[in-house]
Image (cartoon, rainbow, N blue to C red; front, side):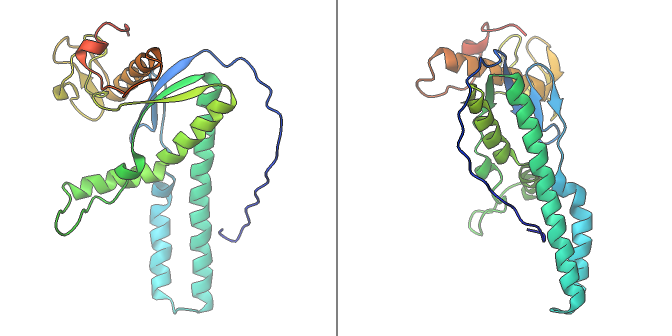
Amino acid sequence: RGEKWDVSIQTEYEVVSSAPNPSEIGIDMGVKRFVTMSNGDFVEPLNAFKQEQEKLAKLQRKLARQKKGSRNSRKTKRKIARLHRYIADSRRDFLHKTSTKIAKNHSIVYVEDLKVLNMSASASGTKESPGKNVKQKSGLNRSILDQGWYGFFRMLSYKLERRGGRLIKVDPRNTSRTCPRCGLVSVENRKSQATFACIGCGFRSNADEVGAINVLRAGRARLARGMSGAVRPLSAGTQRDRLQH
């Protein structure tokens, strides 16, 4: 890839069991903040492709002007391949470092059960059933793919398992609309992408942090039920008095 080789080595080893960190955390995923945690910590996204997008487009335009099969065109193709590799390696490095830090500091991590493949599918739809808000959704799709949500969940899952921890998924419905103070569920609580303001009790906070708190609570509720049955969405009745923030 990009004029370099990857080597994969499979080994077998004994796992030394150790007591996992008893801490637990809820996580909310986003494009403005890659990860927001229920304790208020957050991780800014890397957006590896976005950072190099202009440079990549310039190289591709240059290649389009060059004669196919020429020495110059082959040189440009190699530069494009190297840049694609750099983007992929930067993203992978970011995901490994972020997932490792979370897995080291928490034994149970609650996340939304997001259908990432569906979320990042084409927003255009079909000729018979065209998509809505295509431009906005396409931008969201690109951000999700660029940030590597699917790879992040996969890394976090196996790293937690290696340390004796667990990754628990919860129903994502209403996690961004439920007030963590009074339990009111309303679409009007989410004032903007970044702001949560409850229309019932007036509680205000960062919207992603509120989502992470609700994910934590929903995960604890599911764990208390023994992970059995369907995962129920948050509601005022089930979440109102469960925990105080």
